[in-house]
Amino acid sequence: MKLRLLPALLLSLAACGPAGAPDTTPLKATLATDEQLDLARFTPEESETLARILLHAATPCDGVRTIAEELLDPASTCARARGAARFAARRLIDGYSAREIEAQLLERYRETQPAAIELADSPALGPADAPLTIVVFSDFECPICAVAAERLRAVRERSPERVRIVFKHYPIDQLHAMAMSAARAVIAAGNQGKFWEFHDALFADQDSIGPGLYVRIATSLGLDLDRFEAERISEASADRVRADRAEGARLGVEGTPAIFVKGRRFQDSVQYLEEWIEEE
Image (cartoon, rainbow, N blue to C red; front, side, top):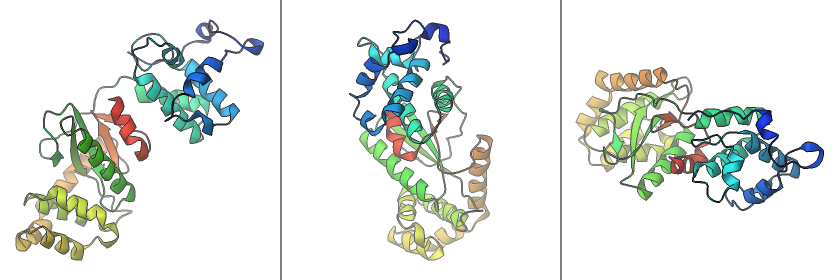
């Protein structure tokens, strides 16, 4: 199914209000029942704009309907329509125009070939056969990456059999002087079976990232310190980070966190990550 915007001819078949404009009253009444969308936070003009966007934009499911038609039909089986409406509402709040939001809806819900991401040698949480694999390219000095890590962990804890999280290194040296060394430290910890524990400890104390923190965490985790230090500064750890970063660049990653859900790029604010994942 490919998303498209319905031509004006089809829209003219919708019920019309004053001066031939489509009547958005029933749709706005339906949107008002969605607590997550929270239509009350919009001005009347914004509510009207949102409704008109949904009258134009095609269903995120198979078929030739609009998002509005899915929402107004009690028998609709398109569960993603409500998520699409919330997505449009968030974009409207962020200041995007109706035309921009329509284009973003097309991008968000269009069918795409999942990105081919190498998973075999990367640290992972969750069963290998989990139906939902989430890959995150991250930087240990990136504050938003720390927030994303918390949200991803919460998602997996709620659905431990359904979700698998795979970590990829993407330190941005131009912004974060210690990000590369932190990545190498967590690799060394992973060699002793403590990747995720070290990962969590680094994100919990981002302001202190450096060799002193690495030793404190390694000690608290009971690691062999001589081995840890040797592997932290080894060329092998640097090669591993560079390989992840090269893969990220191939996938178009330019900043962090860069998250792929079932091979598709997550393109929203981290605060909406759980809602995005629930749609999959």
